[in-house]
Image 1 (cartoon, rainbow, N blue to C red):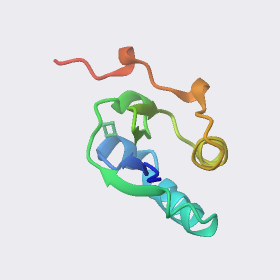
Image 2 (tube, protein in one colour):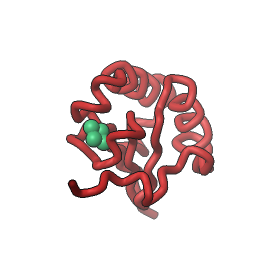
Image 3 (spheres, protein in one colour):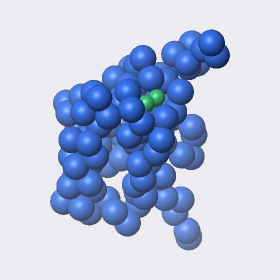
Length: 103
Ligand code: FES
């Protein structure tokens, strides 16, 4: 039986970078390795995900599931509950209204 890998895309666009997404990237990379999740999770960084006012943002496929407002503590919950436990952290889901409006 083949298992679908989760694909993670952490935004490293200008707004999310200004909110320290580089530190979240390091935290995530270390956690995936330390907890043996690299066999079931594929991790990438991305450009802007159009939810700039609510970043740092993380997109997960299959889904899409969009997490917003990441802090180290929230990312730890996502790692433990979603990536390890299979239960998405629904209270941290972004909503369609958070998407950047065209100017
Ligand atoms: S810079 Fe991250 S959503 Fe725009």
